[in-house]
Amino acid sequence: MQEERSTSGRDEGGEGVRVSVRVSVRVRAGAGKGVEVEVSIPERSTYEDLLAHLKLNPVEVIVLCNGRVVPEDEQVDSDAEIEVIRIVSGG
Image (cartoon, rainbow, N blue to C red):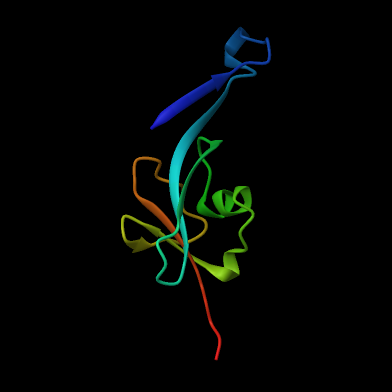
């Protein structure tokens, strides 16, 4: 997990300090290989926050963390293998 710290000039009492984490995410559609992207999100982000950052509709995808389906309200594990699979349907 990589942490980035940025301050807004107010160091007293830790105010203005924002911590974010960098996560690696593989996004794919169906059985395809997919694309791996790295994003920075706030430290306590949920998978719903991650999907919003990636501009993905949570109704159209499944999120896996280390091969396990995770609920949208669970906190992102930045040390894990995260995979977002777009649900593909048709006739």
